[in-house]
Length: 308
Image 1 (spheres, helix red, strand yellow):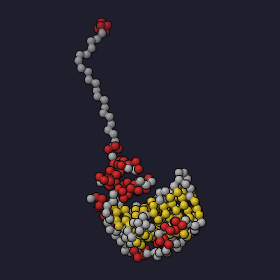
Image 2 (cartoon, one colour):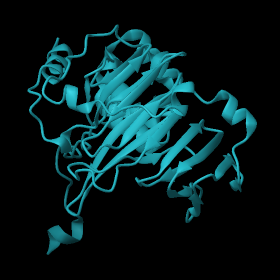
Image 3 (cartoon, one colour):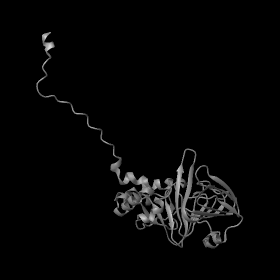
Image 4 (cartoon, helix red, strand yellow):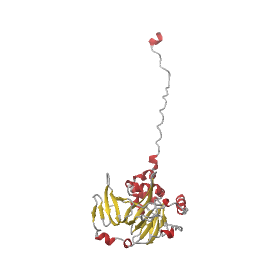
């Protein structure tokens, strides 16, 4: 009941929020997609505003376009899973998109666009890429990433132990990297990459944020999720999965979800205190030693002592 109340409060909150509180608005949706929000999920729809922490997952034949206030764009292809989040410090607010797997096209803001909200930094299992004015098409999985710079320039940091390796890319460059290896750059994209690229990525689509600026759409509830639906997120890298633990800890009270958490605990050990809180209770201090009680008659003094 409490989880349902919290989710309802999130979904019905006033929408006159500052742009900094919004991670984008879905402006085009062809096909089906769901949004994991709080401890539940909702159906994606055109006009729905995404909030920090939302996870968007598209179906096998879906395309969606998400726009930010600065006119930067993220387009998702089929079977894509990504999380929007915000990291805030005293110096600045970073908005980043974590791509678990799938197809994404990022189109940076124009130079004369409003600066109400910066574009998306991109993070993926094998690379990181800062927000820029470039247009980039990306296909990512935990084992391989391919990236084509359609327009502009950008830089890619290869994630690895120690300092990342930074690669500078310009329009027309094609970057590819497999897990455990250094990336390579070629002057044109691989034929297989071009053949499999979502067709919508080839078109220049209009911006449609203005039509939803004053009339955002309330998402409709979607069926509750089970462990298998979010297993990839629960087993992601620590910086991704730990915030989800706090968001989904109530799921540990569901028998099937709990059993799966326990069976896969080695992949997400941070759940141990939630699953077995008794192991983490403060230990009771040891009991104080008992006083020694002497019984019977006292000893008789020695003879020499009596004589004196």
